[in-house]
Picture (cartoon, helix red, strand yellow):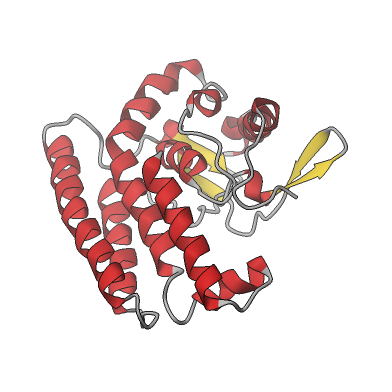
Length: 231
């Protein structure tokens, strides 16, 4: 498997693009037969805003690691301010018809949901993707954002290779939508990374790292956040 934080080749990223393309090649033919919605695959942008607010509220309410209280509070305050601005921008875009609140049906895609090279296994020169328990129909704009933002095995912030796997006639709509909602998904991912610094979850990071050393775990997760925000 790919390691946490591993720098991956363009060839490996290309495998992901092609897998996504194969997954969606017959999507119009199976649209009627597949009624599963991907995790958080909301059709409305306003529902994605509510989901981000829920995640931020969870971070606020989580019990914090002793000694990190003020640091986490500062992160929460910053995310709250950013979320308020992003919410206003998206609501304005919806009101002025710059973006549809509800994604067009033909601009949904079949998404593995938690899609990225962190959920892939190297098999010789090939790559096999795993973990489809949350797969289903999703807003293609959200899939683009999540693919380039997931922090475990970073792939860069260029989503054009993934976008090119979707029909030509829908790409301008999907990319415009993705650019408008990307700041919202950016905040969502910041919340997810920060939530791992709660007293109930940081031990999960320790299991992944194979250590119980509190300082090493905290240092690792803070570095994940730093790298994410530096992109």
